[in-house]
Image (cartoon, rainbow, N blue to C red; front, side):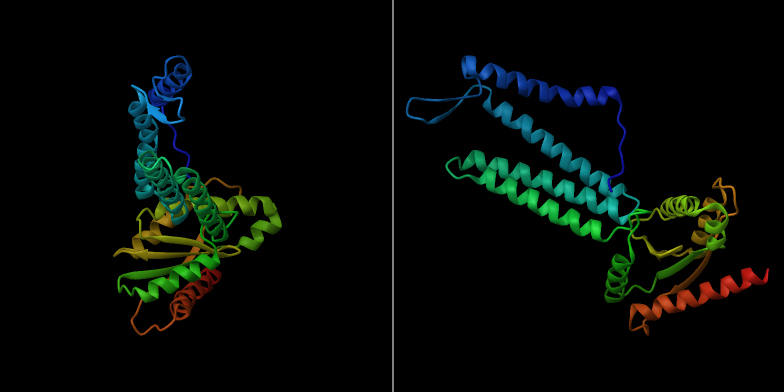
Length: 277
């Protein structure tokens, strides 16, 4: 779900410096109480470097929340964007809960807040997994229907629905095996991700060898050409391409099915032309 972000070794070492300082302070605390100590009346007393220790811990949460926000803005598809948002919210909540615990030390805020945060993250990730196609890591049909329903509620005249179908996919499976067919579907899914770089673009696997894109832009023909170009650059022991049908959203469309049927009709016409050639 999360796209792997590679960093340089120097960046990793710099990121470890606060952690090393934090560990050293913890190890030294039993000797001189530089962080905290418990007096004879069982009262908590701050040490000289207690605020520094708290700041170091909050720093990781702040940086983590900020980085999650940045990566969510750069995400190329819904799944990655949602995953980074969930991670960022978790980091921000943990920082807030930790701060509140320092203020209200007699109340077990941190334990309760941590448990609730983990539960919320778990539920959110489970919901996201339900909406992801396991093979291509695109949105699945269930998520597609939800998104199209939302699009109809927030009507935008500058929206296009694209329906794509892999040409001669049954022949690929029959002659080269289903493993090669699965690899082809994964490769096409990656091509769609590379082609649809706008935040508003939505990509889903409708089922089998069919994909769906919701495009909000002015150059739908250019998008179709870009998709063909990316796919034709793939290296497979067979010809690989897709047929594309699309339809612009119209206000008279009452249900998302009407929009889908119109795009699917154009796809069917494209397939007929292909068979004729």
